[in-house]
Length: 247
Image (tube, rainbow, N blue to C red; front, side):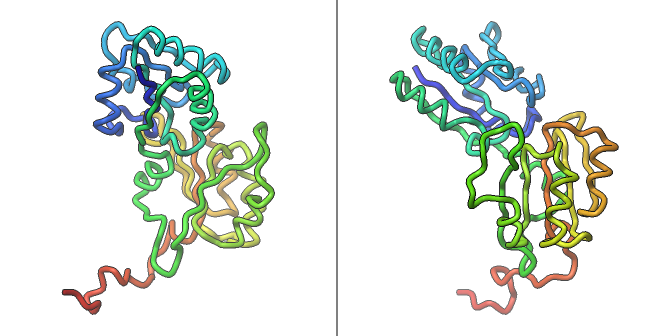
């Protein structure tokens, strides 16, 4: 049988893909990341399904559940928050499954940053303002960042910057970004995007830390930084320009 790594999206049960819902409905085992998921997501699982919350398990324990389901002849969904391509430990888990000879596949999900941008109605790439989006994190109680991916280095591009797993260091990060971006650079923070307790904070690098601390945000938040977040007077896209030659 197969292990299906499924992106659960940012949390809302109706932001799952059709494929994700079908896999949940037909898999008798679901190993899910309980820290970030709305319980309604699990409502797509069939009656009597075995549900395993992975938030307090290490990778070996998680893998043991996946392998056990396979050996029992059961398909299993490994439900990841957001999209499996970002900070999901997909690489570590699939390496273990390959070693155990267990087949697997991946179903993408709506990433948290996309839900956050949608919530505030902003495009992260605006013509001649920002055409690059950098998705990154910072080092705290976590594995080291590669030397070539320091925040100071990435910020020199002044691209739209999306910070994951960084909300507890907002004040420190804002101070570091003021140099390349400017104190008046727009910042949007979205906590628990798409969920009932969603929090949206708008500000600048000068004041966003105060707002985050006042709101008590400690996890499950995305920080977006860049001029595209408040762009008003900008050049329109060449792709849709009425003067562009078309067949």
